[in-house]
Every structure is written in structure tokens, then in C-alpha cells.
Image (cartoon, rainbow, N blue to C red; front, top):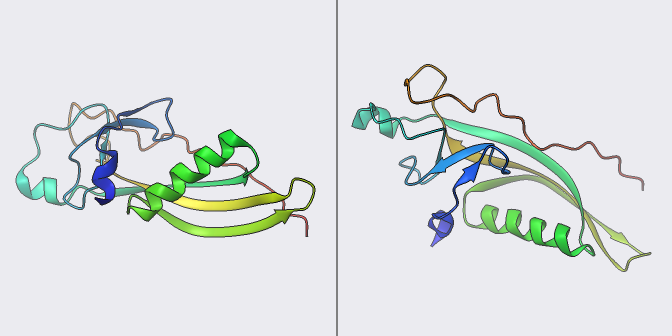
Length: 137
């Protein structure tokens, strides 16, 4: 099924997506991110919607149910072709008898540059959710 598994996700400015999601998006299957789908695009322009790659990084403590759920969601989206895993490092935590995982990934969206359409307000300046961590070995 791939990325179509997430067809119902709508995003939002307070979501991990940094903006509204619109399906279908690009011809590659990635959702379009913006305030609305630009109605003025030609079919050629639709085929050439540029991709935006939002970098994220985070340390997950997999003994924590909420963090395990979020980690699984990210890995599932990567397995189905929406997200792109860049780096993963697993550390076994003796105290908790479980894993601590540092993960870096890109979230991919179709997104127009600001000014292309009057209906597009641009989320290219949306902040990404990043966190700096130091690994002690």
C-alpha cells in the first residue's frame, strides 16, 4: 500500500508536519503541504512540484510507551516510503532493560516556493522539531 496508507492525515500548523496536508499531492505520492492546494497550476507544474525535506532528530527511550508509539509511527512512515531515515543508533539501557534510540530522519512534502500562488501562504519557514542530544558511551 505504501504512502497511501496515510491518505487521511491532514496535518496542521501545530502538527509534526508543520502545515496542512493535501492528498493527492505530488506525482511521486508525497502530500502537498500548504494552506490550500494551488488551483492555478498547469499539469506540467503539478508534475514538477518541488519537494521539501524537513530534517528531524530525536532520542527515544523505548521503555516509555508514548515515545515508543512515536518511534513506531516514524519507522512505519519510513518503511512505507514517506519519511527517509538518515541515521539510527541503538544503545541498550541496563537500568531500564530496554533500548534508547537516537534517530535522524527527513519528512518529505511537495511544497511550492512562496509567491507561486496567491492561495499559497508558504510553510517553507516552518520550524522543525529538533533536539540536540549527547550520547555517553
